[in-house]
Image 1 (cartoon, helix red, strand yellow):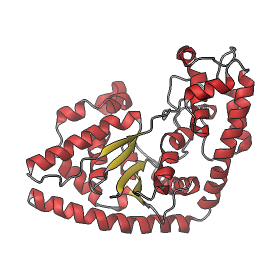
Image 2 (cartoon, rainbow, N blue to C red; image 1 turned 90 degrees about the horizontal axis):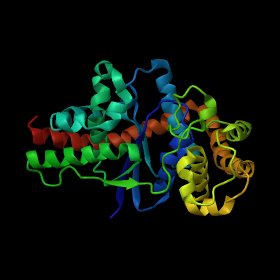
Image 3 (cartoon, rainbow, N blue to C red; image 1 turned 30 degrees about the vertical axis):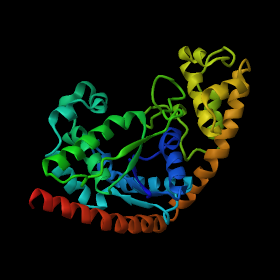
Length: 333
């Protein structure tokens, strides 16, 4: 029996190394596994929980599709579509929001982090976002969801919603309760300027991140200027507790080289940071530069990207419509 995989990426533009190593690289491996049926969604409904420029949003959707394809996701093997084009997502989100409980949503730490002290000014969408995420997943009878540490709580909520719906309406296993697929090795990539902050496109300095559209020279320059310290490379994993920036760079190296952190430490222990940075730059250029070139090439062919979305929407719609029709029937519509 094949696995049904669902995951989404927000079309916020300027996807970076954190998005790639934390999610997209894993998507490619899932796409290539013949045991998996994969659906990759450009979650544009989620994107508007924070105000977007309408003119940029459509281009950002295309850029996300281009990044998927350039990274190695085959649109013939997997479904790639944008969420807002499948009405069942919005319909299911409302029905499931009537199943979800306020107490569950009040425990979501990501809302507290994003809203901060301005909680009263945050949109209702930002607050109820995890219910829409649950709808995304549950419409496709998803068995497994690749999640990072910051999304584990949302998947638990999705599982709770599925179980409560099934119990409330006495429909055993109607909504598939999905399992998490958690990347075990270093899925959280931090800023090149501050090892305590997650790599983000919203950070003011472009030197804080490797964008997936950066060229060779930009990648090398950013690694050269990445914050570190004057000490040589660590000899033990315990030494990294107080050296967050070095830990981050070693984590990036490990992800790219498919090794664990301790093995990477063994390779470079006691050496100069400049030597390590050079090796890391070479690895990054080899991995990211071909993707960068392909993204730029694909973005010149908007009709091709739109065709991928159109085909994906058609396939996603055929699955989601059957599920939402049955959901409506169950609740009495």
